Length: 481
Image 1 (cartoon, rainbow, N blue to C red):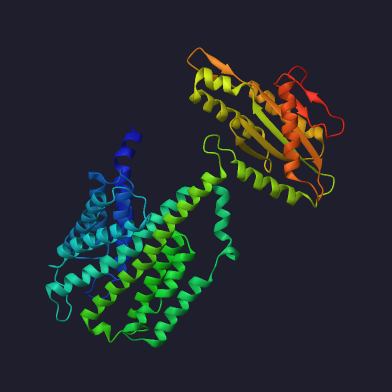
Image 2 (image 1 turned 90 degrees about the vertical axis):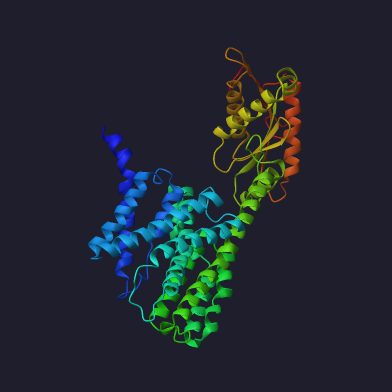
């Protein structure tokens, strides 16, 4: 009973609470007789409705209406002003929601350059609808006209949406990818490149000192540098702080644009100019996000085998060379190569088909990966052949690991249907050498490959240690180590 009530009314309560607190913050920022200087409620509500479908129901919209009205009532607005402002805010959010679903249809945020165009269209539609409904509300501004009220409201709403929505989208995407160990990286300030954001702060200071209409363009190079240097969430936060700082400096008279506080047209021009100014770095970071994703996918395809999810041949060889180079300074250690081949794999493919063969390869790779410890390298050399590179103190240590893998593969059952399964075995060749500066990976690989062929020749499902290792011994399926 309680769960059904919570499921029905909790979304409305959450929306009402968010809108109420955000609206109260905005109402506190009003100058006498003017619109709020800070109004995060509409952008937050639009983001909630776009991102979480359970909020975008009738109960959620009613909760938003209640939040607006309750905030206005608590802060002392008259009934007429309270209802009128609430209707204007809801109209903007509704139009923005409809436009977003029609244009973009998802809530992935700033991915790709088109997303910034969609963002501009959605924010413009939301701001225009809110301003159109709110224009009729009489505001005691000197020389106030319907057009001046509309354009002031529109420019304010557009600016707020353009700087707040990207932060919400980027923040959700970033938090969804974090795991507990990664949170420590948030506090790793020493690794942050502070030069771009430092140059932005300096350019804002220079604009304040210089003044004049051209001062608004001073931060452009620094903003673009930030967009090229930081990922999406930090860039969106920088843009938000930059926007709020510049707006605050103008309100405080620290940044003068031709007596803008006395001219409505200059105020509107400044706000619109600032809004379009922040679109530049947002567009750059959207493009960079797409490029980073493409590079990551390319790196993934080059580094990892797409079927078995172990290292590709080239990546395996490169990491093996790095392991040898890293371990050379250590005394008393060695490197072992385990070369592994699935027995009669061609027969599996020919008899049961390549789909079953692929399942066999994936099962073997999973079995090996579950046994390997951190720092032990596994790669697919091609076909049904795998190789492992490990640090080992003795040949026996490497052979013991090979036996664990052999036994694990013996336990694999590949289902053909509900009642039929096939099983596999593997042959493994092991080569071991003490670490020296003259150790060659290709020599070790050749020794392990020769040992693998010996294991195949001696009956398969066994382990052979390379003859170059003193005290050579072979292991077959009967006597476990």
